[in-house]
Image 1 (cartoon, protein in one colour):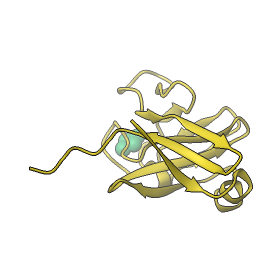
Image 2 (image 1 turned 60 degrees about the horizontal axis):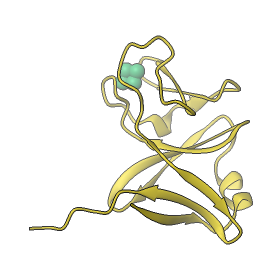
Image 3 (image 1 turned 120 degrees about the vertical axis):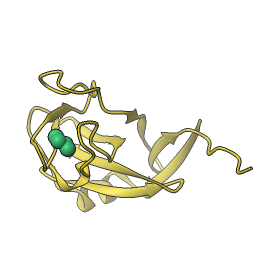
Length: 113
Ligand code: FES
């Protein structure tokens, strides 16, 4: 696993992502979704486990959920669980706010053969 710096500061991250929106970022060639709620910042996979819409096009709410734009499934950003258990949980990536920036932990990329 490796830590990848996404933002220079927590303030920069929060300025780029409002509390009701999410945004896609490419890390190691893979799109992830960064969400901002009252509980803070979260990093999750961007592909909805239901039928694959981009969660970064969705919205977030005060319950710390991200809502998929297609069928409105709601995923809790702390646990990854869908609120009614209709599909598998979201893959989450650890996110750390450090003095020098905001980092996301990501698996090492597979060596190309
Ligand atoms: S594709 Fe996300 S809820 Fe259906």
